[in-house]
Length: 490
Image (cartoon, rainbow, N blue to C red; front, side, top):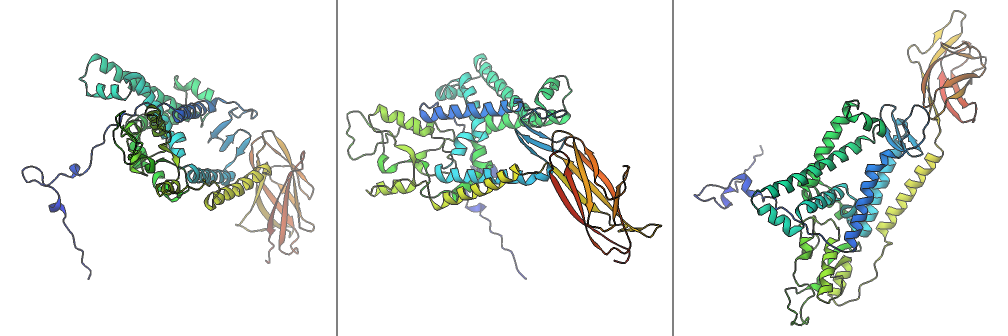
């Protein structure tokens, strides 16, 4: 019988004062507040522009109108659960089109893989929602409390009317932004003008209030108080991206071949026998993650490149070339460190080619599918119990259910034809028709209708296939379904 051995390592841990064993909570470091300093430079400007564009798209897209016909919200982007449809400008997806949504997610993932293999974690540094909203919250914080040094002094200062006013003002604006964020998210699931008009009168759906409240709280806490902890502990992407990059991928890199040995420098000192890094720590002070890029690649680094702006600004002041911290590859830094000339950065590599080819294949397949997607859908379901009925005249009757879907925005007339049985006839319950002639079936715009069809044939007819053809009377668009017809002795 196997036995289990328990090893107690608590005796190896340092004891508290008085000889008591350490408490469990003392084994974990408390979070240190990060006070990012405002950086100036091209990458900071790019981040401002990206933040403005992404926030503008998020808050403004639900208000973009798109004519969809009577009875449907004229909204360009809408996930309409009540009608079980998703609209994206000219694309209309039904539940049967879920594979297109899956394809879109696959394309987005492949695009993220491709960008990561080329430029590292630029998604994290520029367009990730956590980064964008945290950047916005820090901007608000800076507006109320000042830059890094001023915020640090304010937090250490005793509580006064000035401090309380600044703190309350900051958190009030944070809550307003969080509410706008949660409210904007709701507009993607309901008609934006209708929900906005009924929000403050209590006429909006209960789910709208519920989910807006959840998004308000999550935005406030994730962007306002948790910040870098979300990227470090909650997000899986830092762990995944390590498998998607190689030594040829561009990353925000401290060029240790040029910066070391580093240390403070006076103006009278020579640059001989030393690196260009003057150990000013500006790269650390501007980092929203609070890390030191000079320590090499780190899981916490989001490649926002603000350390590049801060370092370039210092290099200009000390009259040294820019680019001590820059987008570079591991292989280039290693080559320069050995006194070799680094090879030119290769964008086209087996990894990037595979991502691009797979993206092109899936994208082309989806585009072809959307371009040729039928606007009618007919499904035939044969009755299983009973499989047939013998009529008083000796003929055999089989029952079927026709589900007819009109995906167009206008009413249509469909022509139903049943073929494949010699001497057979059909009728639709509730309609004045019986025989083998084509039957007209009216279908409403975006309608889903079901019809009961009874097909009759002689008892001598062998078991065979029956073809149900549905055709648009105006356009000729056709959908064909094949089922079986059973007789008494089959």
